[in-house]
Figure 1 (cartoon, rainbow, N blue to C red):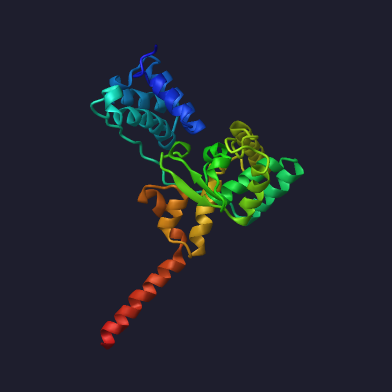
Figure 2: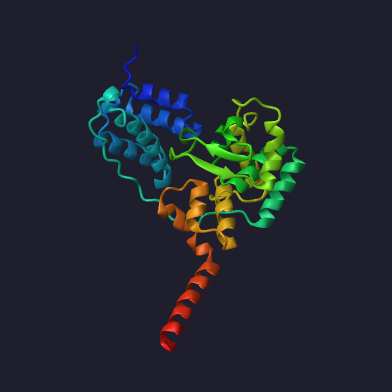
Length: 288
């Protein structure tokens, strides 16, 4: 029987619980760099620093390195919360890398129309529907590909479990009419334990997106990635001026205010309303 303290064994446990595919693959890469025989109780700050140095030498940016660190953190946290099994006394300190706060790329209406035109022409309607679902739900690609029929309630609200989300926190996502029209036919033909988008492939989705980038002459736009569909959802909600930031954060699964406030600059109408309230208060103070 293998030692349960091995990082490889913890990785297996998390994967069996439904760890998001891309995070799981990053976790395997972390284990490869640390050593397949590494025990969770052996990982220390020196190992983490060496891991970061190695990833930097390979040309990875701070934001990408943080994704690998997040996978490592998930494995360490799993053990640390189960002291009776792993006897892990303390979590090693993880120093997160600085991330470039470049603008969050989102789709313009004409870009969305062009994507619809091209993918319909290419007869890639199944992947087009996946992309449109990502725009309307704000889900990450891995989340959309992992949820099952059993995650969808009678009101067509998707309830993601912690193991299906990037940050490990469950959340509920109501669907737009367009998203419902995409999901309903799929739900009708699968069992409760089946994945709703189980007929689609993560890497195929990435490859189709690369084809789109080339066809739209956006190869040099490094921010034009599938993840920008998620930003498109958040941006449209923020620009409407009708949805409070914390509700946008709740729908997208952002736990940090730092992440949520990235969309604050998109709601000037709300800020104008705030100024109007202050002006009114000042006028009352002067007249009173």
